[in-house]
View 1 (cartoon, helix red, strand yellow):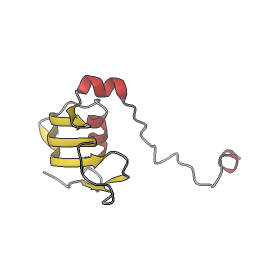
View 2 (view 1 turned 135 degrees about the vertical axis):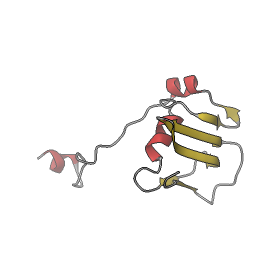
View 3 (view 1 turned 45 degrees about the vertical axis):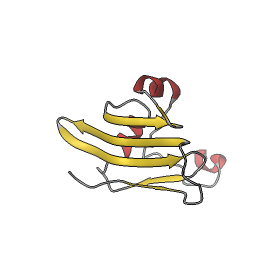
Length: 112
């Protein structure tokens, strides 16, 4: 298995069942493992950073969390299993294009 991602949640938020909890999350593409997370908790109301090198699985995790990618394991929201079909209906994702980003401090300057 290649590089791994890191999930770091705000330590000021006390742990409880609110937010997203992942258990034994695994995803393969073409028979090759591309994402393996034993367990992780992303607390509600906290800023959570998901970091890792290219190919670590950050985009795959985003697709799993929104229901766009099939996977093994469990995704829970607020302590209850969050089924893939429900995530598809209740989520949205916008991926950035690194070739087309804003570089100025205002929209007016960006489109000028």
